[in-house]
Image 1 (cartoon, rainbow, N blue to C red):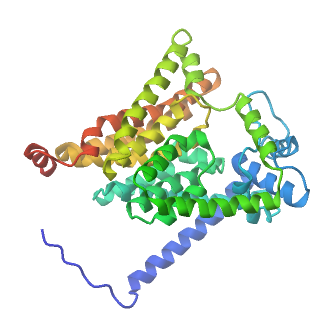
Image 2 (image 1 turned 90 degrees about the horizontal axis):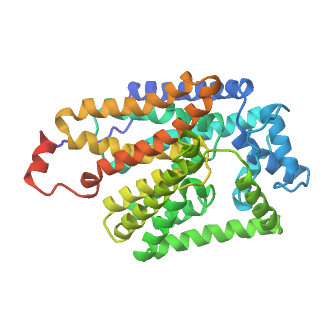
Image 3 (image 1 turned 180 degrees about the horizontal axis):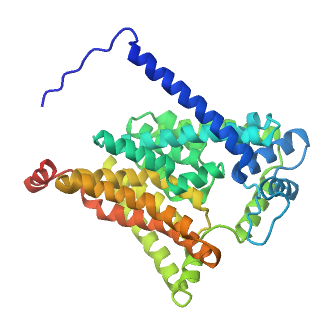
Length: 420
């Protein structure tokens, strides 16, 4: 089929001006809505722990990893009524990353600072949806592109990430940008993004390990040059600003690991299945480690399709390896979900539209149903089921489409099925 390209117009049309005006109005409405929401809603602790830590260091000369910072954040989030099981909000972010919060810490009002930060997270969430679709090379009908963007922005896990103002949203955007830039061979930019991604290990550690291994095997030295250049500058500024931050940071990290908060696959399985949960937890962890080892051994030297699929598998497996994490961190699974939907749609052309729509609706609706139907004694069961639902569903989806995701069509029947 011949495609005719129309040369771009040298001037903006009235329709272009209407679109720009509409985009500006929507942007201003979103800003106003976020500001209003941050004045009226609770939450936002994932942002406040960084904002309070930065302000405590800058204006009060207080160690940002101290208990005083955690107490101030608890006062902001819980308004002084903390109880057992609440998040302790202990800052365990490396100081070179905390430096990035210094500009917004100059805003003295908590609600305004949170609103500004949340706006950046919303923009990152939208960019995450766009990059996730671009990675798949999915020439989807416009309806599915719009519906996927809606699913990415309005799903339960994204809502939780925005509500808590979680940096996991920014990390998810970084991961999608890293894969996109890697494919485009923008190696120095990849290295810079990697230097900003070295925290929240429970979210992306398997993905980052695979990525560095792949870059090493391919001898992409410019990635390491970009990484070390930005990382060394950040560490230099961090040690120049606060020379003794490492020990307090490590102490805060250990205290956070000891805190009984968040979700871990082992703990959830033990609670849901007291008799078999511990055994199933270890079987799941060992099985995932073996699966990752096998897939990584092929992905580090395979083509980009195989590496991309293995990267998605690494993101989906991370919440199930046994480390405690939080439900808003699962927003990173937007990246592998885009791959699953695209392959399902392109592989089964005859029923692809309906099947893809049902899968999207299933992934979107189940967590929200669990959230709205949970009450009283069923709340813990619903929250744990919501935590397990997305990574398990994503793993099943990734292995379902594995053959077609990592291999181009090889036989005439495959080509016929894709055209039919």
